Image (cartoon, rainbow over all chains, first blue to last red; front, side, top):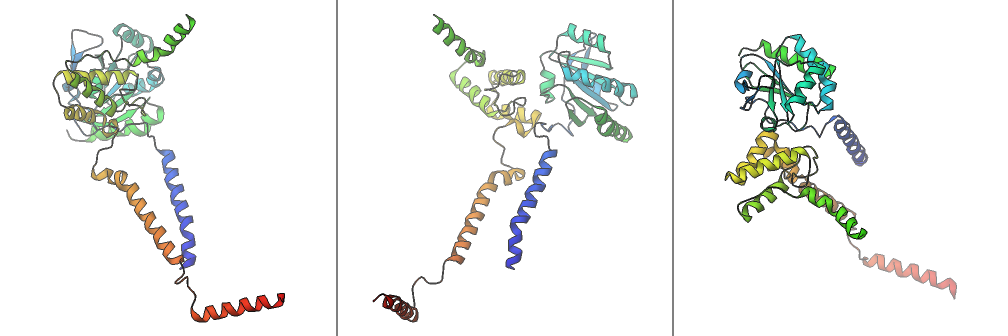
Length: 179
Length: 151
């Protein structure tokens, strides 16, 4: 019995190592969204391109969609742009842009320069819509199902592996779901 | 003159934190300050929105200010933020079934540790520190023996 007791510190050490190893894979600065599983927060704002037209949360109902939060001043948005474009070209779900805390002219110039992957962009210069969506950093990408319910939020730029492993499989699954 | 300029220059950071928000009453301003200290800036995650100068912190402060002016309660403002950003936006984790371990864990560990220390110390203390009669006689014998060779 006493011999077994000697093993206790070793076992505690092993347990500690396991927890620390798990800790290395965690990303504590990513704040999980409380909106997962909830309908998209309501909003009605002018469109970026056609100022006299509006876009609202009801436009997000009816088919699977992706909402990508971007801004012309955001460097990481430039990094993820090819992948957002690729996502848009896959044609599995429309990509709707939420232009966050930006200047309209600069935003339009950015799209002109790099290419417009968005079916439509909502213009949110004061970040009010972003606040309702729990946006705290740009870029952020939301995936919504056919009922307009937020099913996933990706924080930070979308990369090839995020697209391949997270977003595209989820969109495929959501497209299978009955509305 | 240079000292004055230097002092003023060093004091500049204070101006950065100065709140441009106005309130109808000192109570409202006190509420604003309190809420500002309770809500976390999600960008600079170690700071409250009161301390942080990030744009998000400014936006959240503006939102808190707006809601205070609208006459919302502290509860409503906190719920508003938690609904959008989750529990992490609060500096104090809420007391829920899922956070029981976080709140009470340290005290439980302290009690367990104290218990272990007590149990171990009881086992190590000898049954009696006093000598029995036989042991005392033996001790006297040994002492006498050690004294004799000296004489």
